[in-house]
Length: 221
Image (cartoon, rainbow, N blue to C red; front, side):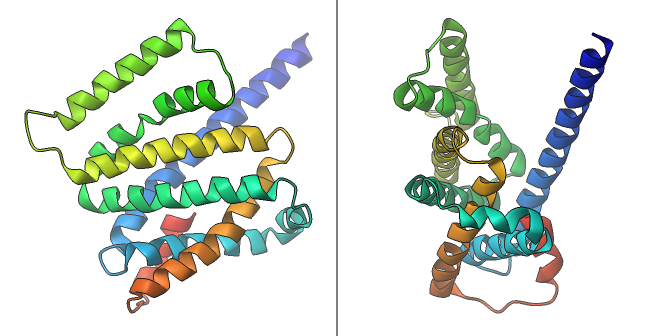
């Protein structure tokens, strides 16, 4: 019994560490993307973020590259990443145009969309708690964007659409994890989104400077 408790405690600590690292990475991506967008196009920001991701995959090649041998559920990977890529594009526009506090507040509506999409596509039950949380979240959105009190910033609408896109992307991830590993999901995300970012960036390519490289790393990690 003591060993079981120690094991559970260890998993809990590891979970907290991963959550903390995830939050640091997310903040870095937000700040880095905002800085890059001051000199580069949004499309370039997405491309270089994916390029840094590819560098990470190559660095951990022995662990991650074998995941490319399995193209299981490739169509689902493709659909997930098309949705995720568009959500990233809209979200990055929001990061550039809105205060980061507003972006984060609007992005926290993602659980609302996840609950709704899980009900629609995964047939998960919509419990009273979920319904209450969804309604509360919707009220929170109204407080943030204040429709009727002031002109709603179009960028806020883009971030809300991005949050919905991220929510739908998570539904794809939940379905994928039934058959493939989390590592495979990450690897295929980079492999699919890198060429998408490259093609998009060529439509509005701007000169890249050495000062941009540190922000690329911050945004990509």
